[in-house]
Amino acid sequence: MEKARTYQEKTLTLAEAAGLIKSGQTIGVGIAGAEPVGLLTEMANHALNLENVHFWTCLPMRVYDVFARSEMAGHVFNENWFYSPSDRHVHHEGRVSYIPNNLHRAAADKLYATKGKLDVCFATATPPNAEGYMSLSLGLIVQKDLLEAADLKIVEINQNLPWTNGDTLVHVSEIDYLVENHVPLVELPSAPPSDLEKEIGGYIAELIEDGSTLQLGIGGIPNAITAFIMDRHDLGIHTEMIVDGMVDLVEAGVVTNRKKTLHPGKIIGAFALGTQKLYDFLDHNEDVELYRGRYTNDPYVIAKNNQMISVNTALQVDILGQVCSQSIGTRQFSGTGGQLDTHRGAQMSSGGRGIIALRSTAKNGCISTIIPTLAPGAAVTVPSQDVDTIITEYGVAELRGRCVKDRMEALVRIAHPNYRDWIRDEAQRLGIVPKTQF
Image (cartoon, rainbow, N blue to C red; front, side, top):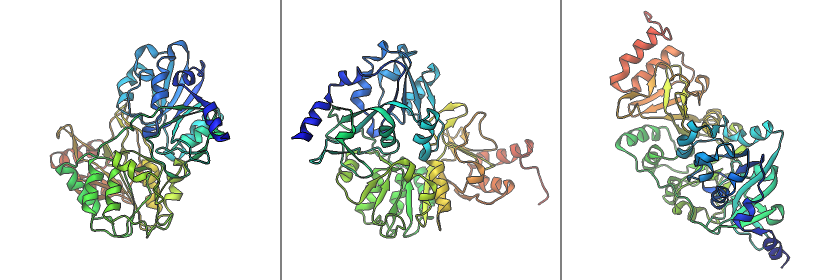
């Protein structure tokens, strides 16, 4: 009865909770499928009465008026670890700014910049169990770190969230206020792979051996990989993001996690985003554990998995081997996320490999993604000294340890044929790879 009274006494309406926010405060927010839909929606009804409120967000999955409406200028400013389409849409209005980060340091570095100060955290969780514990469910990248740092902790309870295990538990007694908002979960349907993505997936699959541990992203290329590795045995998962394709691999008996050298028998992740099929799979599943991004994405932790294979995608790769996955020139498109974390960790692993996969062209073949130099202002997501394996629909380029001349030749072979001569000619014109007699 005491626990019930505590829960009831702490429960506010959304309007009451949003009304606690004061001018000048900073609010850390749960990410992606763990974003507090009700609290962020309600803040639009209060923000115009406030000044200089800062939010820390990451990969918002919905369009919220508190960030989208132009009249919020001066009232609300959004600092974002990873842009989604809604952020790209308003970036030019000056009300959102990207936070450069590596995922395993995202929360720690942001709190370092504020000397550990965070006024408020908006998080999400399942309803509490009989002992008063709630599961933070779909998002552990920064959510628990922000809850622990915040002076005011407000949790949005949603009965539709799956109960996940790992480092997800928080007791009601640790929270200041609760709001109930039982809304449907955001779903991200699996993208069917195109024929071109199937070609890329086939090349990647050739590098995945029995007993490997995988980190896969989301989209057509990862989905294509799934189809090509259905004959593998005893694969494992250690990833930042758990997606639907991993469920397919478990159900097919391909992923067993038996051969993992770290957390054997367990799928390890930091957050989950997909369809209801994924969320049902996660609910009370003792074979899946979610941990904070500072753990799952620490390259030294990742490296403890033997035969670790990291697969990420990119927008451009230049002949030095520099990978840009987050911007189009000076235009912020997404973010670094955990790409460099997992890429480095995989290469540090015994028998591991860091793979960057991309189509050879963009805009219906009008632009080569393999280029002499990155576009002016483009952000470097994976530096040249960290690059390993690049794959397009034309094959595999092994870059690790190679000189720039050899890197260029390897990348030219997997570039679209229409651009191969241009890449060489530009590299020579710019003096990056002068013409030699060898």
